[in-house]
Image (cartoon, rainbow, N blue to C red; front, side):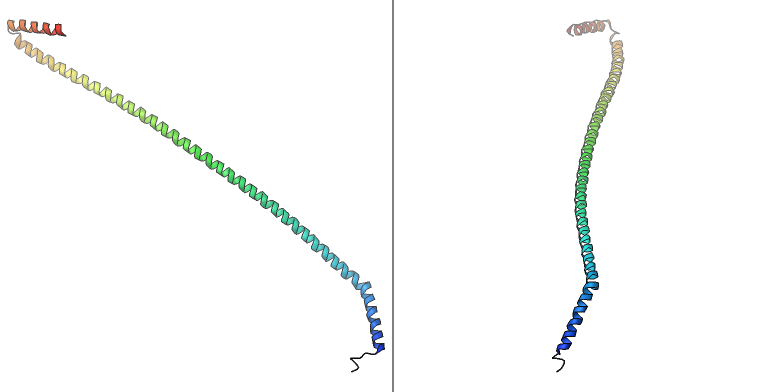
Length: 164
């Protein structure tokens, strides 16, 4: 039971040893421990400040990146719009040019057909006139053999001339 009930001397010397230990710890260990804790606290504060600055910088860069993306999209849309307008203009111009060229070709073909038609008609007229002259010559030769027939023919021709 001696261990459970300490004696006064033991308590006194234990208290003195404890107080000496506290004084020694306060003088030699407390300051370095508190200094280390203070340095650790400062390094943690600095790390937190740096992290906050990095976070702000990331937010700024993200915002700037989004702005750049919006500008790029707007430029892309504008370029696509201009390209579509240019394409439509080129197509319309090509259609107009094709229509003009087609109209020219059609007009040229009509003129060529008309010229060919006139040439054919002239050739037919020439042939008809040649044949008519030949027929008339043969008819006249047969009719002009007789004098009475000649006079009748001249009279008929004069009547035709007066009517026309």
